[in-house]
Image (tube, rainbow, N blue to C red; front, side, top):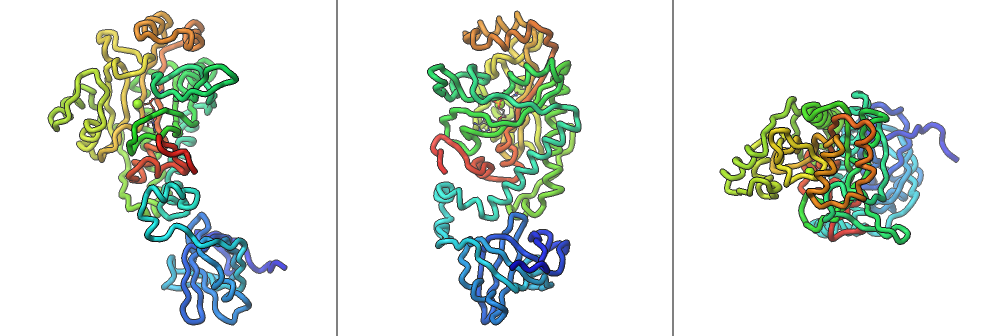
Length: 432
Ligand code: 4AD
Ligand code: MG
């Protein structure tokens, strides 16, 4: 029979003194040791860790606590006590210790944990580790900040399809799927669907997975990732940059306010972002890379080494603006007096990390867009509905997309983007 004295409480509440004096803890045994007639178990419950002590002779608590293996699911009932030696200064002295699901011998030993690839092979288990937990909690803060930011600024959250028929960001990274015998692809970006929603809603945003058949093995590419994208009508690129930097600043602020402990677990020192961010042009970025010995030709994409070098010269996020058309997707608008330069920008993180987001002014005029599609030899049929939008009231508009894992990686100070994903998908990994 359940003892009504005990109130269910979280580790976070117990350590913060917000629980009652007698608690019921639901969690998993993270560590355990026995000294004399006492078992000390550190129990993890998703909000934190709390020490449980079970003394010999108190009901059967000591015996069951002794039998509880690492990662067993347990329910513990007992009294909260102050104890200077316990992590967080409190412990629960167990009156009852119940093993709800006994774990087999935990395969992630200290030695095994040294291999990153083993940890990712066992990701379904290794996500219980403190760094994985901290990363996920920072990620949730990053996403939550976007929900609040866009709501506060009058953007409507929409959704888009995952099965699509056209490339947004170039054909080379499309994932084909057999759609009942017809060719279809997994969406690279929801941008075109956002543009379609503009005449209905004026300011929209979206949060959904994006797929890229990226063959490169790098620490910043996933094949499946989450993107936050926004699009707004009757707006120009300066408004777009303000929206981007405002969003990033809010993400950082929220993490600093709410995830201090998780940053500490990851050994990350993070500074608040002060606005406006510095803006440099692509031409200036080229000069910086050249001076540092990583030159590239005007018109090319900024390569990985050059991007790292440029990023390292900054100690706060910044924008690189005015990319050449040859380095951008077809829908970008160019300056009236500079037909080879687009009104677009990448939001870059410092510390060698580089691109977090790309945004720009879209071509809103139908004939211009048709010319662009023709000049790049793109299949006009695939873009028929996208072109159609330009026939029915399409004003100047801008938008951007920011990668959730890239941003989490930077904010949390993670070495590899896969650590910002619970179950990462890369060129070499599709399991677990
Ligand atoms: O720069 P990208 O390719 O831009 C677009 O897709 C635009 N259509 C977005 C828009 O304007 N609505 O992708 C946007 C962001 C990148 O800056 C990066 O953060 C992330 O998505 N991203 C990736 N993240 C992880 N792995 C990959 N392979 C990524 N490719 C892009
Ligand atoms: Mg980009």
